[in-house]
Length: 115
Image (tube, rainbow, N blue to C red; front, side):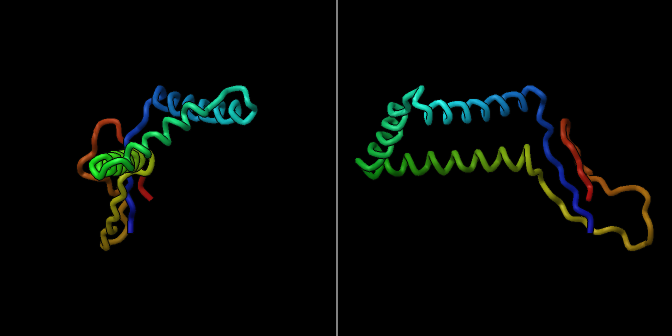
């Protein structure tokens, strides 16, 4: 069995943005734990969103749907750009084939890994 994985290549600027976002999150956590910045307004905003969701069933459905769609978007981004789409194929049984099996529909800016 041969597994072919195709995933989109991220540009250098996209990797830079991801790296900067991770550094920012770590810096905010460190600064908040040292008491340099105060995150209570952010925590109050977080709690107020869920209090708004508890006021009415329509608000709760909107909040739940929004969080679900955010999860779907994050899953889509992770599978498209980091994990890739895996296709398992069988090797022809006619003996040794020196040419690797590649997907028929390759897309621009994709990386193909055969294992």
